[in-house]
Amino acid sequence: MEELKSMIAGLGQQLRGLDERIGGLEQRIGGLEQRMDRFEHRLDIIESDLREIKDQVVLIKAQVARNTESEGVIRDLQELVKEHDTDIRLLKKAVANQ
Image (cartoon, rainbow, N blue to C red; front, side, top):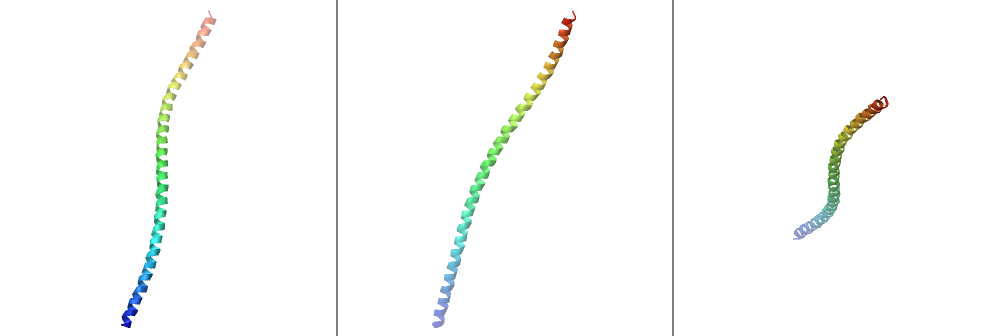
């Protein structure tokens, strides 16, 4: 009977030890959950920033396309102005020589 009581006491001690270890594991899991929450929050911020950057890139792409089209028109106008300038000079000389 004493041996049985001793075994039960030993089992009780082992159970208390397991309870302590489980408590430690629960604390560690709680800490991991907090870290995961912070990580998820940071990830949400990064995703939001990435969406904003993508939107800005789309706007920049459209602006570059408009600027490129405008540049072609401006070059055409520059060439036309040069031609008109040349025509005006020739007309002035022709009028001056008459």
